[in-house]
Image (tube, rainbow, N blue to C red; front, top):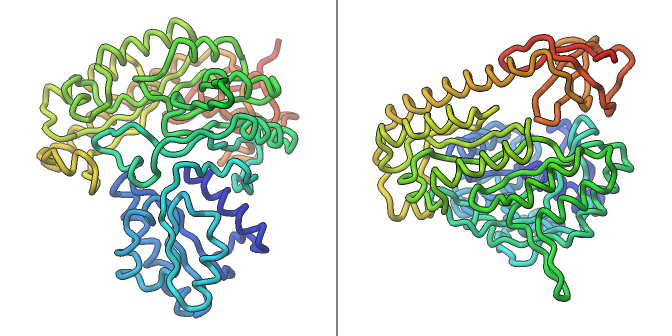
Length: 429
């Protein structure tokens, strides 16, 4: 999501004569896009600010700005603690950047962190900053209405609002015409996408189908689905279109119904398992990934083992796994005690990671001997004689390049695997 936001910012500024540079030493404006979702992300930003302090000393005219979620939450601390920051801009105020830069150039601190109920940046054509020229992101909605106890998104990104569908389709067509062959539709909860106009309603399954119909050669992914909202209708839409990728990211966060209730996730362990079963039945061969949090408030060994058993049962293909870190202002910070010792959180997280490593390895071993269609994204990191791409299930594949190139679809026979990668050869029929 931060990538998509950065592309919107780049578009706003290039329209005003700015140019993007890859050399920070030549920049007259440095904008650091931030995230407040997890504590480690904020720590990295403080470190980044310290790392560029010398540039400000060397170039007194350099303007440094903090944009995004952290900017909204920590505006006062940022301006007071880090005197090198000139601009603080929240995620709904990017259109104001040119004016704020003018204000900073006149010697004043410039701040706009107001949240909006309407802003979607639907009319802005992002400047694509991705490196491969094959895959890109499209934000279809902003904000979130799910008040998960541990999460800051509703506070720093505001309420849900969806983009007008034609603006999404127009962006997809533009990407395809520019040579892109894969697009990921983004939203905090894409299942909540809803556009009403003159009595007609377009929901996410309908939007996804329209995007898939732009061109069968354009692969379509989406992130993220919420377990309480993912519907059989959405799954059937995926099953009807080969170019909608067979991968669903479905964050569980915990396998304990008690903890899920404290998290305000609005589903139970049983409901989550039902959704996994629906995915397996309606879309055979679909990969499923997840998020897991270890050490949430009051989590017991029993709750922890419930998470491990859910992971084992689901056989997730991969996962994002974290220790719980209390975020200021959230419901959990206000009403629940962060009472699981850090060493216990770490030990439980290590168990979760160890289990997922085994599940991921098993998932890849199960692919050996199968043929997958791979979209080539570029050369392998290790050799110019090999290409790299992803399957519909979002697994990385490396294979000899022969006469193939970036943007091609290639049938690849999987012959072996490492812990992170499938390795194969071009299939001969």
